[in-house]
Length: 328
Ligand SMILES: NC(=O)c1ccc[n+]([C@@H]2O[C@H](COP(=O)([O-])OP(=O)(O)OC[C@H]3O[C@@H](n4cnc5c(N)ncnc54)[C@H](O)[C@@H]3O)[C@@H](O)[C@H]2O)c1
Ligand SMILES: O=C(O)[C@H](O)COP(=O)(O)O
Image (cartoon, rainbow, N blue to C red; front, top):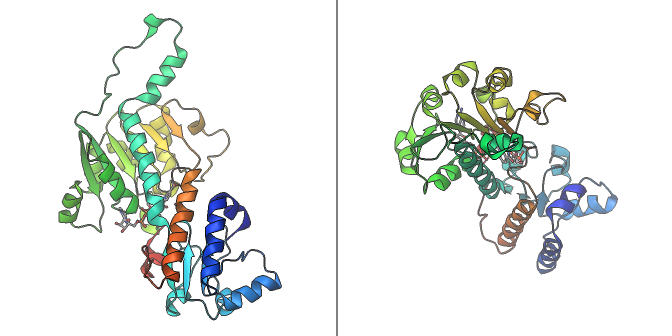
């Protein structure tokens, strides 16, 4: 685990818990691979479990060769794609990640974005700031409200599924586009399965939850964006690359569309990008899933998994080899 990340991720109680775990099971060790001291190399040689996170160096063939006793890897973050290789599965090493735990905060952010978009909160706040006298108040905001509005969810991923779940109590129609999900499964989740173009044309809010893959680059391109109704909102908490930003910008600059963007491409828009100032855009710096206490959620999840491993129980959130190749 990288030292900076460990500092943000592990609260004092986690260090205490980790130390207690290591005491109860002498084979359970967690060390900082970023600091290749002889002591760490020796620890690696005896390590049965590794705890990794963002910022940790990838478990290359060299690291794996230096850890002959390694039986399990617990990744206290999302996708393991940039941290592990097939070699882990070839060696039968059990892998767990906190991607499922990370899904809830992102889904919560999305729910908040959807509700605020429907209530036209951004728009109202912007107008309110410019008011000089009460009689300037714009009155009813046309198109505002939840009643009978439609949310289009792209991707029945871990996060997409949680979003659909969180939307259940509201008076909203939910559409789902996911080429890998059967219609019956979409219906069971509580969403109507539709093709991508139909989702864009029929949704007041389009929210993106697919992984970044070659096939999903610019999934929302000029055609899909043009299909979105006037005044519709795009919510992107997935990856900037899924949306063709060059096609999105004019739609935002004219005010035809609104957007809530936690991710962009690159993640921090270039200096001077209109995204920073447009009144119809809410821009956040990739924080939907990993802000403050949410990092502690990931640490708690990872320590639960370490504890289960120590007790000889299977992981709650095992990662299949296929996720290396299909996940974000
Ligand atoms: N903003 C944040 O803080 C934050 C945090 C965590 C994850 N993310 C991002 O959110 C997205 C979802 O993450 P996840 O862990 O839920 O993903 P995931 O790994 O669960 O997604 C896999 C699923 O996506 C669906 N999918 C695959 N290709 C698709 C396509 N072409 N169109 C529609 N659906 C498709 C399939 O159902 C597949 O099972 C990812 O892009 C991830 O990087 C962002
Ligand atoms: O934005 C994200 O996807 C989360 O911060 C998790 O990232 P990761 O999947 O690359 O760990």
